[in-house]
Length: 268
Image (cartoon, rainbow, N blue to C red; front, top):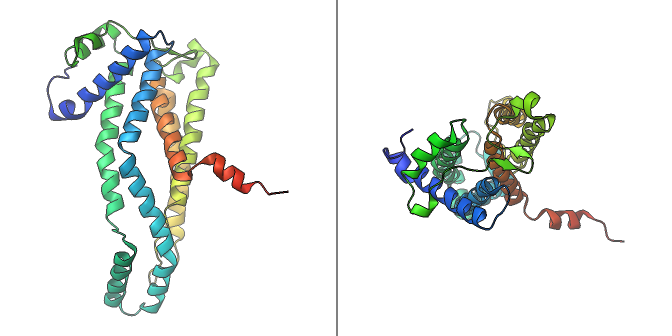
């Protein structure tokens, strides 16, 4: 593998690998068991915090769209026979509410290359290549000499994160918990994300939003099952990354879970 060439490598993958190795160096130096697993968690948290402003903007935009939904419905009914007037009134409402309909997509697009870079960086270590071969490639692109590696410890709380759960007959049934947990977290992440996204206003002549509801329902189940399958056939370290990201997304969309729980507890 050659990590020394290519713009994508230079901008995203090489810096990500260096940060990952930096965390691994620190955790190994203090003698923390499962240092590479904790390095994946630390790297994922760091990336999540880096992207937090964009994610926060996306969430705020979705909440504003929810608030606007009743007003958009009223406008749609009031100007159903004048599409031009309807568009003018909708744009006026967007302006008054400080909403840019295209902004949510822009924030999502900004995150995609970062996610890909993180995934690719982790995959270099976890794709099943001999660690000696990985070390040779990685050591060529480290920023600081002390980050160079000879090997990594793949064990994390009784799991070898360098192997896929599909190898459970050889390594143990407990590996099957990984895709199950990953699918559950993905399901809940999709569910809370969808709860923040308002349905599109029904246009004149449309039967209903049944098609949109059907597609949303399919996404709610198919996407977690797909990620669960990937978690089954790919190295467990990638599931660790997915799960940490999912937990952060759920917390961010739901707010403070403890606060929400306390609000629901009736006072005596």
